[in-house]
Length: 178
Image 1 (cartoon, rainbow, N blue to C red):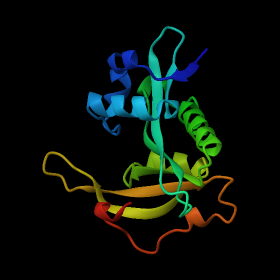
Image 2: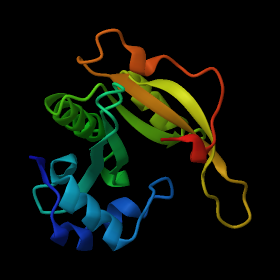
Image 3: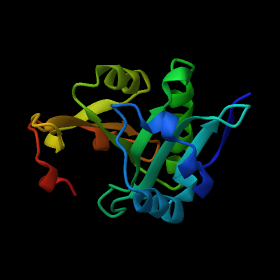
Image 4: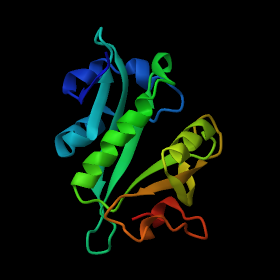
């Protein structure tokens, strides 16, 4: 039976099987610790019965309540290759959305590589839509060009008029994101 639980510092030594995927954004240890310290409720791991980590989601709450931009943000969602197509990503997203609802968020957002059509399609199945394209959001390596991202959003119950998901008519640059 899969266990969904809060991420702990010890998990940083056990999640390489997840992070070694080329489409998973990886960060330095201080970045993970910052999220663990500031938004522990948004950092959830799926663990197999034998203790192997299957996947995780890392996010935060951010934005302005006054401008109706208070929201949950998915910083990273990844499932190890051996555990894909079991519904774990959907379950982890559902948990983050529930936390964002309880915190009074208007929407949940995330960034995904335009080329990652498997992920884009999964998010669409989960009710997300493309809000805007962010030009050259992802830095490339090996002389490749930088890659665009979709900023995808899903309105929560507080956004009764669904204003947060009305698509922007033009792309933006990373420096234009608030």
